[in-house]
Amino acid sequence: MQTLKSGSRKIITALVGTFALGAAVLYAPNLFAGKAVITEASSNNVMKTPVQAELDADQKIIDLGGHTVPVLKNGLYDRFLSNPPLSVIAEKRPDLDLNWFKTLKKQKKEVGFTTYSPNFYYSNSSITAIYTADMDRIEELMPEQVRSRVQPISFVPGRGLIAITSYAYKYCDNDSYNELSISIVTTRPNKSNFGLISLVGEIIHKDLWGYVLKLPVNTELARVRGVVGYNLPKWLIPIEYNSDGNDVKFTYYDEQGKPDFSMVGKKLKIAAKEPEITRVNFTNLDAKGQLTHGYSDVRAIQQASSRNGEDVQMNLSDGPLSTFIKSLGLKKLVRYDYQPEFQAALYTPELAKD
Image: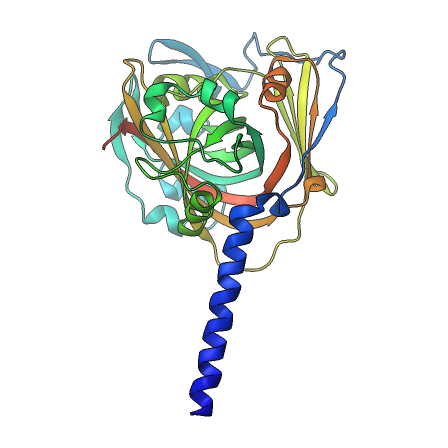
């Protein structure tokens, strides 16, 4: 009998603890958020190499959906479009584990040009910061048709969530490029909006959803493929990536080569664990105004997170991207992700299903 009473007390204690944690998440989410570190930076210096106007010696021109696109001569895309044999990848990069890609089957797709889905990203790095942002501004930026399917997650009344991610795609079917993603964090389709609980649920189920606002890249190949094939808001700007020292730094320029802003993230301590796969979904509108759904499966090989606002910093100027970021009213850092090594499979969007 004593054993039963002891067991009951443990269960009750666990339930009370769980309820208390849930209540804290529900009613005091700011306890889990650090102050965003956003500074003013000068944009007076002009980059020496603005958006490329002439071909480099190692490039050639191809036609992609009626667009003239420079690509790396004899690179992966030049030789195989988006369907290189994994044996070629293994020969070029014997250090990479390609077993996951061997489980995935590509399909030929016509999306304004011929491609093969999913697009493989073999070796990549990223840093992500999720901030609280002004909900009125978020709702203003989301088309009503998109909001009929997914809703911006509410962190607290009047505050939504914005995810800003800097990517370095070091080796992929499109050769290599850098990218910035600014997205609204949303619920899953046609699901109730329970605020932070909805976000936690997506994280637990490794099924994240968002609406992409900005997605500039630094190669014309990535831009054309993204705009024509994926209905994404891409344009071409210079982007620099530097991982020397204790931080990872991405520097973004405007189309004239003028410094716009930089994102600097701390290299967090990586704990040894098995790779995990998370699905990152995006809802969008195609050229006909129809709702589409695309996604990328991300295999995190090395990853660490924190809620310390000082672990990631935005240095903003008066440039166009900086001005846009300022308009979002970022206040609190909800989560910072440091991902020095990951792989991904990006699927072409399809018409959204109810």
